[in-house]
Image (cartoon, rainbow, N blue to C red; front, side, top):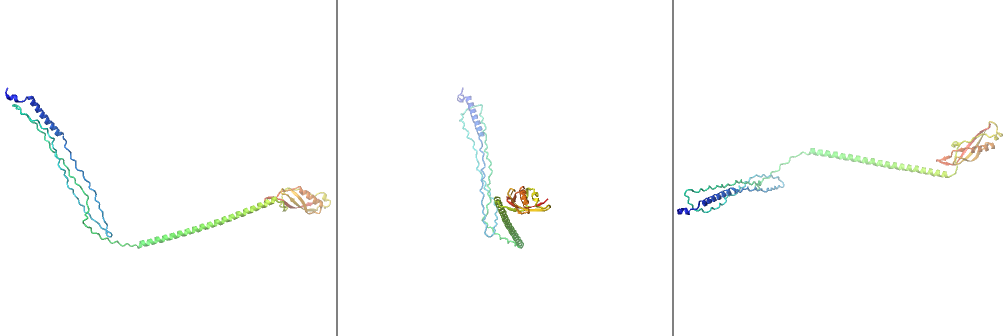
Length: 319
């Protein structure tokens, strides 16, 4: 055995070293592939605050301002390029020089990582046009106002005013007439009420007087004179010529006697007297007796029974 064979490492160690190197390269490639490229987000668009424009009007003239619109293009903002650096590869261990007469180690190709730059769209900020206040706007002269003929309108207004005044006058006249009619009706109603009241009071007074008179008559026994025609018999007496008086009378003669009867409030005859004699005392006496057998209906005055004096003529025919 030569000295060269003694210095060379064993074949097993060499194979382990080669496998370890290959494994490290594979792990590095996997790590590079697994690394995610950071996504670049575009910068958000900045919103510009609206511009406030205030117009000042001249006191006597109308000013019209013309504002030219200007488009302001914002500068393109380009974000800086982002360079993606590959992850650092672990340093391999130093290889020991191995003499292989027959085999030569083959190095694996390293994966090529392309640096991709994200495309960034430029953001253009738009601004609202600002009025150019540097330019002065010449005030426009006011146009002359056209002359309007107001004669027709004035005539129409006067006619309307006259019609309104006439309407108001008619309305006032109607209201005055209505008030006069109401006043006349009120006066007539008051007069009629007064007359009705007076009539009612008079009737009440008369009724009161009659009642008082009737009460006085009812309490009084003062006789009231009545005629024979106003006397009504409740039961009439039987008048006949007495036989005793025939001796002194001639046959065919008619003897008349007048009696005055005092009739009480019940219609009974309380007293009989001879007002005119027949000339035959016997006949007068018999007439007074016969008349007492009768009864009158009560005499009344104002609806109240009263004592009455009745003058009653009686005629007797001599048989």
